[in-house]
Length: 83
Image (cartoon, rainbow, N blue to C red):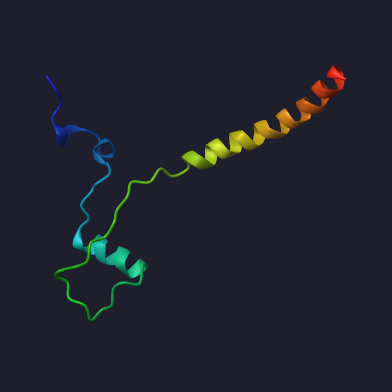
């Protein structure tokens, strides 16, 4: 038998939502400077809300940067041996 959704831990229920609340849409429009206080609350323009992966690329780039100096240091040694 499965556990009821209301009994799960709070962090497990947090996930990416495709639909934003009106307040979230207004905040995002303000950030993009597409909203003024005189505008109506109804008929808001669409707002793209993309799921982002924070930190994934940065970690991969750091690993690549760390590996690059090691590879560059090994390359001249191997060229000297071949000559």
